[in-house]
Image (cartoon, rainbow, N blue to C red; front, side, top):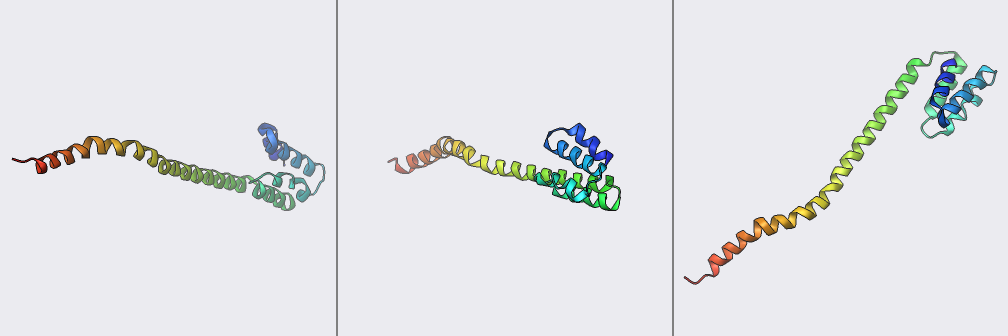
Length: 124
């Protein structure tokens, strides 16, 4: 629980405060379930709170499981960022098409059609 307290002190903010508070409660003899309940109120922190609760009950080390949770969270954020970038790319095609399509028609297609029409309509 010393590691949770140290991380909480360095993080600050709501997560850091709740980590420090939970570690202090466990150190003072509180039950792990009650100590980490406040951490699980933060969106996305429930798996970490459950892991710390199990570690508090069993005494199991938390370094590897916390590292796996962090890797999973990074992978989830990377997937979300990639999906957002792909969505932005798709949404960008409509304005680009609306700008370039009329120019293409005016500069590329219209002169050819006018040239063909002039050749067909001329009376030689």
